[in-house]
Length: 100
Image 1: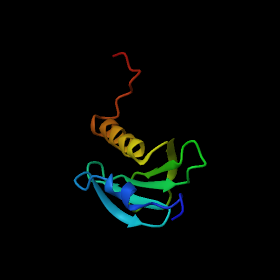
Image 2 (image 1 turned 60 degrees about the horizontal axis):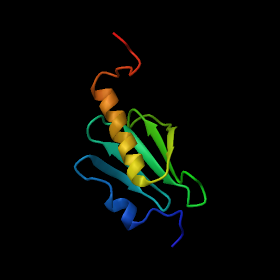
Image 3 (image 1 turned 90 degrees about the vertical axis):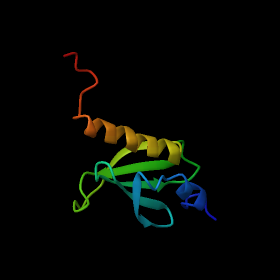
Image 4 (image 1 turned 120 degrees about the vertical axis):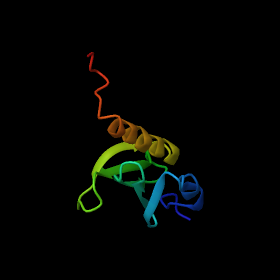
Protein backbone atom coordinates (compact mmCIF):
# COMPACT_ATOMS: atom_id res chain seq x y z
CA UNK A 1 0.00 0.00 0.00
CA UNK A 2 1.29 3.44 -0.92
CA UNK A 3 2.22 5.84 1.87
CA UNK A 4 -0.05 8.41 0.19
CA UNK A 5 -3.16 6.34 0.68
CA UNK A 6 -5.71 6.91 3.41
CA UNK A 7 -5.74 3.67 5.35
CA UNK A 8 -7.88 1.95 7.99
CA UNK A 9 -5.66 3.30 10.78
CA UNK A 10 -6.27 6.88 9.56
CA UNK A 11 -10.03 6.33 9.27
CA UNK A 12 -10.23 4.72 12.72
CA UNK A 13 -9.08 8.02 14.28
CA UNK A 14 -12.11 9.93 12.97
CA UNK A 15 -14.76 10.13 15.73
CA UNK A 16 -18.14 9.21 14.26
CA UNK A 17 -19.98 11.23 16.90
CA UNK A 18 -18.25 14.41 15.71
CA UNK A 19 -17.93 13.87 11.95
CA UNK A 20 -19.98 12.51 9.09
CA UNK A 21 -17.75 10.90 6.48
CA UNK A 22 -18.91 12.15 3.09
CA UNK A 23 -16.39 10.36 0.90
CA UNK A 24 -13.30 8.20 1.19
CA UNK A 25 -10.88 8.11 -1.73
CA UNK A 26 -7.44 6.62 -2.02
CA UNK A 27 -5.56 9.74 -0.85
CA UNK A 28 -8.21 11.79 0.96
CA UNK A 29 -11.25 11.70 3.19
CA UNK A 30 -14.04 14.27 2.97
CA UNK A 31 -15.80 15.11 6.24
CA UNK A 32 -18.72 17.14 7.52
CA UNK A 33 -18.49 18.61 11.01
CA UNK A 34 -21.74 17.80 12.79
CA UNK A 35 -21.24 20.93 14.95
CA UNK A 36 -20.81 23.65 12.33
CA UNK A 37 -21.82 21.84 9.11
CA UNK A 38 -18.51 22.97 7.61
CA UNK A 39 -16.90 20.56 5.14
CA UNK A 40 -13.32 19.41 5.27
CA UNK A 41 -10.94 17.35 3.18
CA UNK A 42 -7.92 15.73 4.77
CA UNK A 43 -5.57 14.99 1.88
CA UNK A 44 -2.65 12.66 2.55
CA UNK A 45 0.39 13.86 0.61
CA UNK A 46 2.73 11.09 1.76
CA UNK A 47 5.56 10.76 4.22
CA UNK A 48 8.13 12.62 2.14
CA UNK A 49 6.57 15.94 3.15
CA UNK A 50 7.19 17.39 6.63
CA UNK A 51 3.44 17.98 6.85
CA UNK A 52 1.86 15.06 4.98
CA UNK A 53 -1.77 15.89 5.86
CA UNK A 54 -3.19 18.91 4.05
CA UNK A 55 -6.45 20.24 5.43
CA UNK A 56 -8.95 21.88 3.07
CA UNK A 57 -12.09 23.70 4.19
CA UNK A 58 -15.34 25.20 2.96
CA UNK A 59 -18.23 26.67 4.95
CA UNK A 60 -21.16 25.05 3.17
CA UNK A 61 -21.67 21.71 1.48
CA UNK A 62 -23.14 23.43 -1.58
CA UNK A 63 -20.07 25.66 -2.06
CA UNK A 64 -18.01 24.39 -4.99
CA UNK A 65 -14.50 25.24 -3.89
CA UNK A 66 -12.37 24.27 -0.92
CA UNK A 67 -9.43 26.36 0.25
CA UNK A 68 -6.24 25.18 1.93
CA UNK A 69 -6.61 25.76 5.67
CA UNK A 70 -3.46 24.20 7.15
CA UNK A 71 -0.78 21.57 6.68
CA UNK A 72 -0.46 19.15 9.60
CA UNK A 73 1.95 16.39 10.57
CA UNK A 74 -0.72 13.79 11.50
CA UNK A 75 -4.37 13.02 10.93
CA UNK A 76 -4.92 13.48 14.68
CA UNK A 77 -3.49 16.99 14.44
CA UNK A 78 -5.73 17.74 11.44
CA UNK A 79 -8.80 16.57 13.35
CA UNK A 80 -7.82 18.73 16.35
CA UNK A 81 -7.44 21.72 14.00
CA UNK A 82 -11.02 21.18 12.79
CA UNK A 83 -12.30 21.01 16.37
CA UNK A 84 -10.47 24.25 17.24
CA UNK A 85 -11.94 25.90 14.16
CA UNK A 86 -15.42 24.73 15.17
CA UNK A 87 -14.94 26.15 18.67
CA UNK A 88 -13.90 29.48 17.13
CA UNK A 89 -17.12 29.60 15.08
CA UNK A 90 -19.42 28.32 17.84
CA UNK A 91 -18.13 30.92 20.30
CA UNK A 92 -18.92 33.80 17.95
CA UNK A 93 -15.60 34.05 16.12
CA UNK A 94 -13.94 35.92 18.98
CA UNK A 95 -10.57 37.35 18.05
CA UNK A 96 -7.98 36.03 20.48
CA UNK A 97 -6.19 39.40 20.27
CA UNK A 98 -9.27 41.41 21.25
CA UNK A 99 -8.55 43.14 24.55
CA UNK A 100 -12.14 44.27 25.20
